[in-house]
Length: 616
Image (cartoon, rainbow, N blue to C red):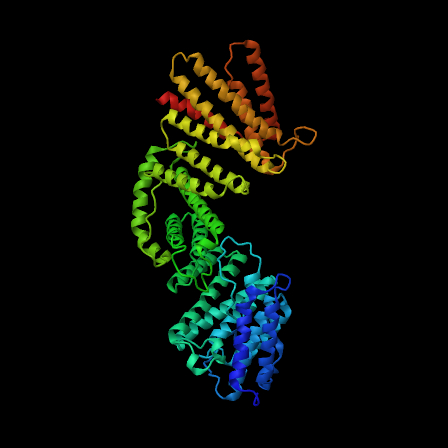
């Protein structure tokens, strides 16, 4: 080291960073890690020039750095000890090199070697981990591998591929090895260290790269603060992932929300990805029936998504709208689908709140719920606003599904059309079908609130018109479950339409032949689709199973019951045909009886139409 100018050492380090971050994009396809290997060679040279690690740090037993070392090894609690003197300064510089070597090895998929370097980095920094010079690097040191972990979570935040840190880097490695609780310990200790540092020290810490910068090129306090806050934001992001893996969904959502909020506060986000993450977070709130929070997330997603292409590219926002047209339209469609789920679930929740014990709209409950809801909103609104506010304007008010059902339906339908612009049958068959099914469900729940039977009937007709074309092109071999869902839903729509027409006809003293024909046609169509559904349960020899699996038992018995009822509802003047229809109906009822399942609910549904007509 004495024979090499310090400026040359710094140049080698900066060249290694450039190779890792900039030249990476220029690597040949057959040598994707060429620049990484070159950067590694330079880092090894710098490490050699710095000399061996101080003996009192380097010769500690490695077990002290493992997950069983206790809170003290992970950083809880810590004392503020500054790295003073040449030996301490060399230890910190070596820690920076070990950190970048660890990142380098992990980037080239050499995880064991990467972990070894990161553990060395932690060991060198442990004594000084809460100092102004080392806190940022130490917090980063256990995170790296987590970014490469294949995740199964609902909440999944986007981050640029650039890696910033070490304590978090080990958390990532442990997560990849399915040691989620170990990762949790490392990441939570990083969070505690950040909190302790901000409380006891407070000033923006040194960025690790400044160890190899001349004095005149050191970062400003503002830039240091920005980078340190970004490190902490990354830590919150990874904690959200860990809690998701541990199925601690409340905490995962909290940390996801905190991450999104901090990204906005520090202006470090990509509009497209921030928007999709906020929209995805709304689904958690929807499942918890927290509709005001969900709507706020979705509204914030719309606002931020609208910034796409309007802000300049940075290291956190590397892509412009024009460079990713397909991604732009895909994310727009995905956000639209989140809105659809919001509208549909809110309407379905209102339906459950306002129906009586046989599933009929209870107008008395409508008034009661209206008054109760107003009282609850007045009491909770200010508290809940503080809990979910992103800091980007006023929180949207919750929509009343009772008073604004049509408005809510139209909002959902608007997003259906928007989602279908991208999710078309050519390339996105399953997604397209799900969007259409959601559209049908919107009509179905809207029909619940409808009191006019003719309009009710038209809504079911719209559902059939959008669902029937789906069955034409779907291969039943590859889309068996989807086909069954659609067939059952179409049959149910025809079934309800027939009941409605029968109820309307019962109001008339002498229904004409046109009405009778209409009822029989609807009956026939319902039978057709129920039979298609039941036929899909047959074995390869076309034999209907004597014992039906639990997963399809209830829908199968429901279909059998309705088929039995439909045969009994066929209107004919021919006694022989009528007798044959009743015999067929009886066969289906006997099959149901043999399965020993309850059908009282279906009987009550049939009776409700009689009651409704009698009262009008």
